[in-house]
Each structure stands twice: as structure tokens, then as C-alpha cells.
Image: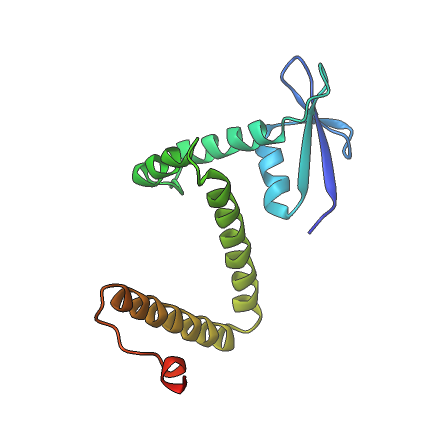
Amino acid sequence: MFPLRLIKKYPNRRLYDTKLSRYVTLVEVRDLIMEGWEIQVIDTSNGEEITRSILLQIVIDEESSGNPLFSSKMLCQLIRFYGGTVQGIFTRYLEESLNLFTQQQKQVQEDPFTTMTRIAQNNAKMWSDMQQLILNSAGFGTKSHDDEKK
């Protein structure tokens, strides 16, 4: 991961990369992010930090061209979380899920066989535990091995 890269947005709507000392396009900012740079965008007219709005512009551009990452159904589901009581929890869940996915991707690249075996084992256990929880909730489950020891 690279250090923080400061981008300034001027009133003429142009973006200025302070490291390169030149104006950059939104596509170039996207490329910096793809390389691993963390960015921070500051609006020079008021000093406001506007990184999120620039990132959202990049997402909109990416979604409008090529193969979109988000389906309409997924976007509708995301919209339904806004303003709800679980919005903060859902935000944290998404962040942690993406972090975990990124870590697993790196591990797969380093040692594919071992990593995929471990992920498959973890997923099988998770599904088994979930199925047992559902059956127990419905009154059809069996006692777990831990319950039998008691």
C-alpha cells in the first residue's frame, strides 16, 4: 500500500496532484487507486474534504462503461439501507467483508492450494453451523456435541 496522495480540486473543477505537481483527470485518479494509493481530495475553495464525492464519481463512471460491478437489484438493496437503523452496522459489515476478500485474494496468489482448501473448509463449517442454527430455531435440530457433554 502506498502513502496518502493529496489531490486538490480547484474551482475550475480540475484536479491537481500535489505529488506530480500537475493537473490530473478522473481516470488518472482511478489509476492511482488501482495502483494502491490512498487518496484525499480537498476542495481549495473552502478546504472541505471531498474524497467520497470524487470516489463516487469514479464508481459512476466505471458503472456506466464496460461491465458493471453492481446489478440493479443490488443497488436497490443498498438504497434500502440508507437511513435505517442498521445503516452503520451494514457499512462496517461491507468494509470488513471487502477487507477479508482482499486478504483472501492475496493469500490465493501466494499459495493457491492451501488457501482454497482452508477457505472451503471454513465455508463448509459456516454453512453447517448456519443450517444447524436454522434447524434448532425451527425445533428440528439435534443437540450439538457440546450440549451432550453437559
